[in-house]
Image (cartoon, rainbow, N blue to C red; front, side, top):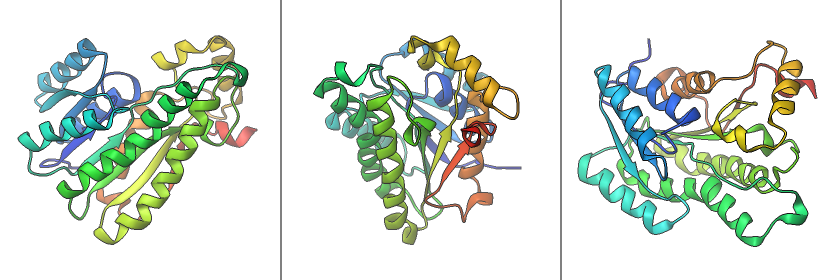
Length: 250
């Protein structure tokens, strides 16, 4: 059994979808969880209520991860409440879904800042609070390595995120802190509703997945939980794909 009692975890974008599932998994194994959100206050409150209703401890803190000052303010609040931070799950993501010809510089800046740069800022703030055995996990997507229609700036930012994880792993490994990526296949979340061809994507992904179903947020959360445990002590700088075999089918 994975025991996270006494651990403090920060999950960004923790109010919905994969982040919410990760927060619940970590809390279920004893971790005290900080759920970060930016717009969905009600959803964040629901996560807190659910975790505390099951005997866990959870706190929701608002921060815009695209804004360096907001990230610093987030960690000011974290340090006011906790003396340590054991787990960071960088899950928050955003970006526009547009063809290349419709993209603007601001679309690129927003996607890269939220999806990739935020991990760098969070790691810099978290490191003074983390000791040996610390865990940093980034949530990515298959769009980091495969071309998806209208996913240009999001996919590029996810590719940058995965590269950043590898570089962080080299620098932080000597401190006993592991850094990994969990790359999710097609997951039916609120984010997928923004795709104009959503139903086509879901049908095609299901047909191409050898295990015969779509990946769920809970599937991704299970792997994140494993990476937070001592069982994963020698998994470092890796991208672990959770997609039921979708990626191997071309």
